[in-house]
Amino acid sequence: MATQQPATRPANPRFSSGPCAKPPTFELSKLADAPLGRSHRAAEGKAKLLAAIERTREILGIPADYRIGIVPASDTGAFEMAMWSMLGERPAEMVAWESFGAGWVTDVAKQLKIEHTVHTADYGKIVDMAALNYDNDVCFTWNGTTSGVRMRSGDVIPADRAGLTLCDATSAAFAVDLPWDKLDVTTYSWQKVLGGEAAHGMLILSPRAVGRLESYTPPWPLPKIFRLTKGGKLIEGIFRGETINTPSMLCVEDYLVALDWADSVGGLQGLMARADANTTAIAEFVDAHDWIDFLASDPATRSNTSVCLKFTDTRITDGAAFAKAVAKRLADEGVALDVGAYRDAPPGLRIWCGATVETSDIKAMLPWLAWAFETELNA
Image 1 (cartoon, rainbow, N blue to C red):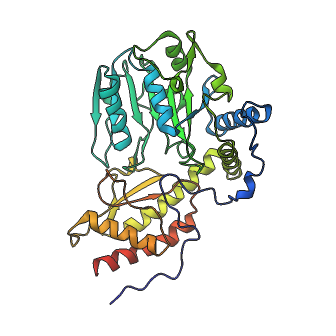
Image 2: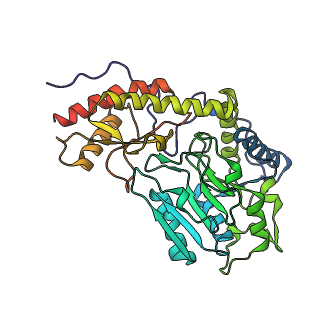
Image 3: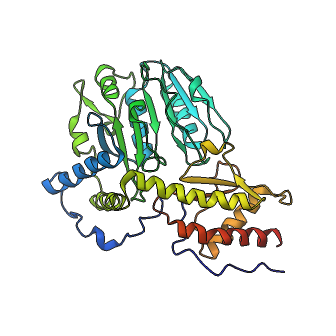
């Protein structure tokens, strides 16, 4: 007998883990103030870019002596810029528990070719961050977008560390209260937690990171798009909105609109509460169904944004094919788009639970997940 479809559908079926859902109040008309057809170096363009920087500082609680820059090529560009500009003075501790962290390992091992130690954990688990040598530079992701695992806190990072900490925080920014005193380089992209438009990255530097840039010159050539210093001094304009290359002022306006919305829901605390409520709704569903579980094995390290799930029913003979079929069925019904697991991750589903997703939509989607599971199992 066919399982009956649920009666209620999500108002917004977009649960992609990047680009992520736009803020619930988003309308194209809200971008009307974008200075299109104008130079980003004109006074209005510079003011918009500086506003994006300073409002980011305000909402995330970034210290006044940290620099914030808008850089090209999304989070990838920002993190690559940091690695190529700062690593090499001392050995590196490379941390990977999912695909993006593994990518940074590859860059250090095969491109920069500096002395390094690799620390890995399987998908669903996390590296013991207390076991790292913080006299070396440490590169890590805070939240594993493709594994659904995040750091508990930054408590194990010593205040008196000799090395720099480089943190890829792209799916944690605006969903986690990041400990800025433990982070020397932090990067993220607009298209993740606030649902901004793609192609722009944020690079946040502590005074220690600036000190490294001004005291150390890497032995390899740096392309112009990576250069953060001139004559041994930080190019301060980059951190006032004088971007390295031409930004999209339409994307900048979209980011400012997203920051407006973030303010309207209570800033960082409100954003975190919304993400936590979404994740709690999924946790309650998982607790009530014995055929599905979190990929993250420890509840204390479960992400509140990129929630990764696995099917555990022993009747499933081909996990990858089954998960793809469930994701396709949900997409075909228009109730959950882009929820398949990342291609390098174990088979399953990945449901974005960041603040721009409404909890009511998560709750409306979950009965459809149960329907899709039963329908595929009985097909």
